[in-house]
Amino acid sequence: MKFTDEEIERKVIDIVAEQTMVDNKTVTISSTPEELGIDSLGLVEIVFAIEENFDVSVPFNANDPSTSDFDISSVGSVVAAVKKLIAEQHGG
Image (cartoon, rainbow, N blue to C red; front, side, top):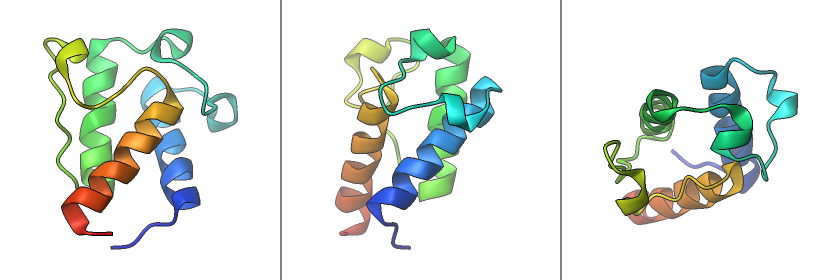
């Protein structure tokens, strides 16, 4: 399945908004987990939703997110990481 960069960005924002129960218009590329009130359980739910929606395997260590190769420092970094995973795992 192919996704445009815009589709990836929009879907990640929608996933984050859904998991944080906020309006997707309030989630921006520069939003951080702290700003959105995302706790460790919320991060895990977001990772699961990303894996399901984009058919990728996310290298995320829920016990110690700082050791993960998946950058969760902002919504924009998540979008970039998803794009990279799609390219690596689906050759596109």
